[in-house]
Each structure stands twice: as structure tokens, then as C-alpha cells.
Amino acid sequence: MELLRQQFFNIDVMVQAWPLILRGLGMTALLCLAVIPLGLLGGLAVAVASLSRSRLLRWTAKGFIDLFRALPPLVVLILLYSGLPFAGLRLTPFAAVCLAFLLNSSCFYGEIYRAGIESVGRGQWEAARSTGLSAAQTFTSVILPQAVRNVVPDLVSNTVEVVKLTSIASVVSFTEMLYAADMARSVTFNTSPIVLAAAIYLVILWPAVRLMSRFEHRVAA
Amino acid sequence: MQLSVAQGAGAVRVSPILQVRGLTKRFGPLEVLKGIDFAVAPQELVFVIGPSGSGKSTLLRCCNRLEDADSGSILLDGVELMDPKCDLNAMRRRIGMVFQSFNLYPHLTVLGNVTLAMRKVLGKSRREADEIGLAALDRVGLADKAAAYPAALSGGQQQRVAIARALCLNPKVMLFDEPTSALDPELVGSVLAVMRDLREAGMTMVVVSHEMRFAREAADRIVFMEAGCIVEEGPPEQIFSAPANARTRAFVAEIAR
Image (cartoon, rainbow over all chains, first blue to last red; front, side, top):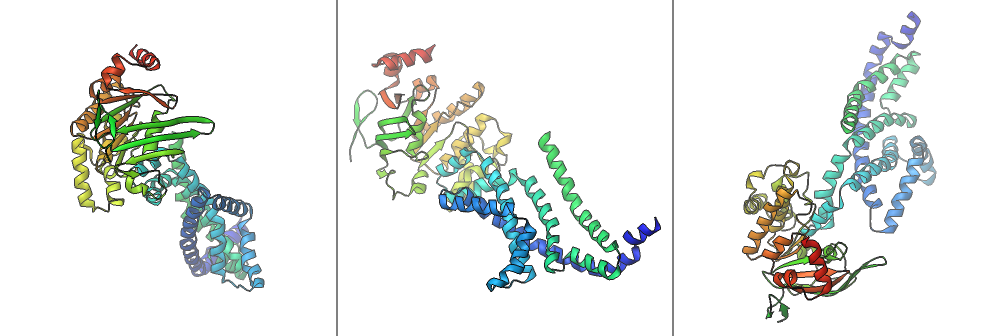
């Protein structure tokens, strides 16, 4: 029992690792601040393209969505970071992660937006157009606000997934929280830093997960 | 250009504000409009009646090109709407449309609903738009609901807001697509009252509706459509009391029961 405590819940080791993990947390936050907006904007572009009148645009979007929903994000990240240099393009770890997330989460956010947009009745579109609003004005002022409101729970849920997934940045030596914790683990030969990192993820994401449950119950009710 | 428009009992020479000629429309194999000729004089209230599936709503929706007709001509105040170069957004401002299902924007307040197009399309300031919007809401008796959201209103109130939304743009013609069909019977009256006020104020209106009593008392002219054609048109007394066409007679007898 004591051994277990020493290996996993060693307060001394945690205290030692704290500054490193805190810096890692800062980098994770920075990463989130970059990849969540990228995904939200990229997803919007993907959704608009997949609902476009142009067949070419529609098929391109569908192909893109299928491809990056099927490819594991970790594979995409390693391909970008380790593969692109052979094509003469060397990305920093941060840039590689951002690009991988843009490709991956645009698809998931895009499908959520698309469901939202399709949930807004055709009458809304017709009412707006009949008052002289252009297609773009109708989309931004009438359709999109309602679409987003209809899919907030799904957007939140996907964002939780994105935050969790930022830990894959550790494989390209980006010093986010998991990378920092793992570094501390390898120096101390002790698992406690990883436990601490897990606890921090839990504390940050638990409220969002609770919120999602609330949403789900409200829909069920 | 002076055109002869059948209005009332005799043909009166006035320029029609809306002139539809040879309009055809098919949905796949189904021919919905089979060459419609139809004109509306300024300040006229035209009622379009007919069995469901006769093409009434499609005709109305073609008039502001929510539905694209296959061929024919639609002139609004001398401007050809079927012209590919026509600035549709500019023309649609002059054609108010009221829908069966109201189609208010649920995410905006009542005032937000009526002022959106003024701000986005006409580029009016929020203050100016609010002023005009409140006046329009006052006209339909709902100025006190400006800050409410559509979900908090009754169907009749929502439809009156929809009318105010169209009125704000100062349209030349207003199209009503079954404006009272989705309403509980006790709420119909308030909407018809607003339409009556509009008529008194000289608004040109084309109404697709099953409110035959309203048609009889308020319409200048009734157009009876069946199977994509205009079968008969004339003043209400003629259509309801002495229809010339056998099919009109059958339809009027059917709805009178």
C-alpha cells in the first residue's frame, strides 16, 4: 500500500514536478487557444462547402471530411511533422500540431455545423430572402445564429475531445502538459507527475462534462 | 405603357403594378403552372382561390422568385423579374411576403425581426430602423410587444409581426400565402383586421387564402385557379353568386357547404 502511494501519489515528487507541469499546462492552454478557434472556423468553412450549390465544392468537402474522419489524428500529425520535411517543408512542432488539428477537427466541427444548419427550417431562409437580404446576409444574420444555438451541446462535447486530444502534441516534442509530466516521470522514475497531470485534466474538463450531461437531460426532458 | 386590366365589372385602363405573362413552372413531371396570365392594378386586392394543388401558392412564390418559373414574364412596376440581370434583392424589398407559417426569426425580438432587413439591406441606423419598426408594429397593434420574443406570442400576433416586417420596407405589393391557415379560429380575425386596414390604406395585395367570407367582402377581384390554369376571374359577386364556368361553380358550391 505504501509502495503504491510512493509510486503514484508521491506528494514530494508532485511538488518537485509542479513548476514543469504548470508550464506544460500553460502550453496546453496556448495550444487550445490556437486549435479550438481554428477548428471552429475551419469547420464552418467545411460546413458551408458541404452545403454549397456547387457540386465540385460539395464533393471536395465530402472527400475531405471522409478522409480526415477516417485517419487517426496521431497518424496525421506524425505524417505532417516527420513526413513533410522530405518534401522540403519543415514545420515547427506548434505549426504541425495546429495544422493536424485544423484538418482533423474541421471535419468534426463541420459535421456539427452542418446538422445545425440543416435543422433551421427552410421558411427562415425564404422569409429573409423575401425581405431582400442576400444569401450571405441571410446566412450570417438568420441561419447561423439559430444553427449554432441548436448544436451548442455538440460543439461543447467536441471541444472537450479537442482539449483532450492536444496531448498527442507530446509525440512531436511540443512541451504541453503531458509531455512535461512524462519528462518529470522519466527523471524521477515515478508515476506521480502523470497522475497530477491527469488530475488537472479532470479538474478542467469535469465542469464541461457535467454541463454536457445537463444539456442531454434537458433534451431528453 | 397603358394596359387593359380587368378590374371590377368592366375593363379599366390603368398600368398594372404587377403583370405576369405566360408563366410556366414544372416540378419534375408535374406541370404546376401552365402559362399563367395575370395582372394586378395598383391598390387592388386580388384573391386567388382554388383547390389544393392548383398552383396558387406556386404562382405567388414565383412572383418574388422564391420559386423560379421555367418561362414567362413577371413585370413589377415595369421591371422584368425574370431577367437574369435583374437585381433580385432590390426587387424583393418592394414585394412584401407573408407566409402561412409566419417564419419569424426565433432568435430575435419582435423589433429585431421587423428591423433586420432595414438595417442590413437599406443600411439604416439602429435608431432610425427602430423608429420605423415601432411605427409598423403600432400599425398592427403590437408596439407593446417590441421587446418580446416570437415564441411568447400567439399565432395571430406572430402573423401580425410578420406583416409589420414586410410593411417596414414600404413594399409596392404584398403577397399573402395562406396567412390565416395555421391559426386557431379565434385568432384569424385579428390578422384579417390588419389586412383590411392595409387595404383601406391603399396597399396592393395578392392573397392566397381559404377565407371566403373575407374574400367576398374585401376583394376587388377573385381569381379561380385549377390544375395550373386560371379558370375564371371576376368580382366576388360574380364568382360566388353567378360563376360562368362549371368548375368554378363546383368549387364554390363545395366550399359553401
